Image: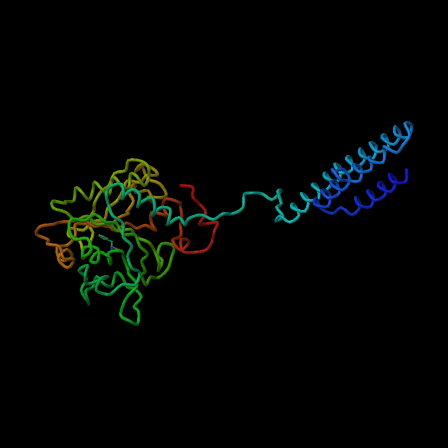
Length: 341
Ligand code: PHE
């Protein structure tokens, strides 16, 4: 039948023009909808003979089937094309690339410093940040090293045009901290220090210390020994012994060098302790009355201890660095070693 052939022809060309889902929906409505071509054409059936009615019905139904299947196939095709377009617009990811890419890590000094801060926080110490550029007064005078005192020679530093200095030790913060907290106080203050040194494997112009102070009524050397022993046992993850030897620092009286039993050989003697069984780690002492006084604390009422842990030294020992200059260097192979030797 001519009308049916026309519908089929226009269906084929309409379908060929379908680009998006909206086109396909329009096509469905145009052919199969309530007023669509294949619905309205059935009206012609009433003028046909019985024989013709039968074959006409079959032909219309066949075409309806063809259109329905065509729409289904086109729906699938459009969906796939949309998915492909979406995938192509996404950033390209190469799933074969290894995920073991370098992510970076904290610096060994930062790792040990954070561990120490946690230990001291647990013992009730506050944590302070000191300046790197300091007044001569704070770096020297306030810790009992007057101008022209020979003790200044032990800590030559870099003098700035404005008469300030790069701090030679964390003790430079003692005065400011005493004035800020008053007595009693328990504070640690890690920091970067600078000295005018001849450089070699164990001397660097820039290094790290971690200082601590405790001031209260009736503080004695026993308190100092207790805190040092507890702290070092925590750091090394095992019980260590400590011993005190006399040491001179103008800001403590009496002053000590605190040694700790070698955590690597248990005191038997090894490479780390240079066969001596002890490691010199932490100068310390009872805070000199002059220093307390300059900090605004009455030395007749309060006593205290101070210690200046060599943080760079501890890091080197912990990770087996043999050259202190590596800590400020940029050799990642060295800095990445985290295995305790
Ligand atoms: N500030 C001293 C130094 O750098 C160390 C120290 C700190 C000694 C506190 C005693 C008490 O050499």
